[in-house]
Image 1: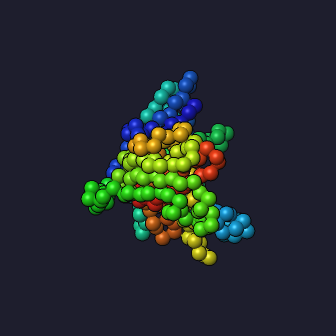
Image 2: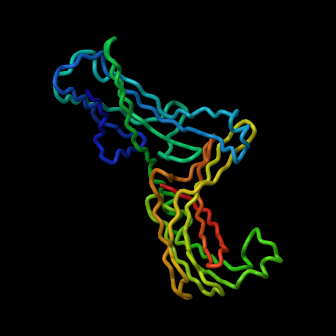
Image 3: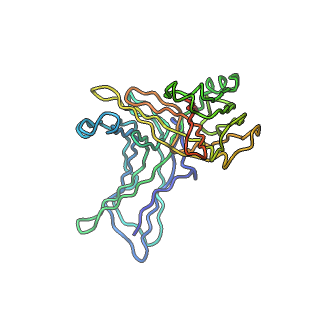
Length: 301
């Protein structure tokens, strides 16, 4: 005997205020089956975790952060009775809305911040039989931010140059030992739609040493508030190579990166947590040295 939660939308993507519809599919092969009713629960929450690297191992272990409950719904979908042999579908529907005083956020799977929404079907059985539960995650996306879209349309490309003189966290005495180079480029937007790729171009104007590789790294910066302050941690989401080997000087290299859906979301700044994003341009030289340029970006839906 099996229990399954099926949603009518294949992509399982819903927006606040929409009606979520689907069915609980009960498969009872061979013979009929008695039960004590099926109950459906809907829950959405933000799970927060402190980083030991950010605040220390002792503080991270003893400072517990309670999950933020966004959605809580529970209702019966089938009274007690008996299912005939074969497959039975029990339809259900509910309106996606937050609990009083709360707001919904984009579904997001992070390291220290996790926003998740689930539907769980519980089937009660008799005393001699084991109860059955089945869970199905669905994805929440907020309404499009038209104001941010208009700002992006009017924004000019972000131009940048990377040279020994522009490097940060390098001693002045050490800069004289760095080989001469100049990297120029642009990002079409630093205020980006999460469903569209990050785009731009890079030009190696000059470089006195051989280049081994050029990479583009997407980083999430997650912050959690706790009693003593705020824990902030940056972790890599993905890393793609945009050039391999000693790149021809004066050749325009396209920058193109798609944001992975569940591991990114609209830039969020809530009371209990923040989720922000950055992009690192990494140039690896053949002699083992590395140059990194950081670009904070803002994502919107």
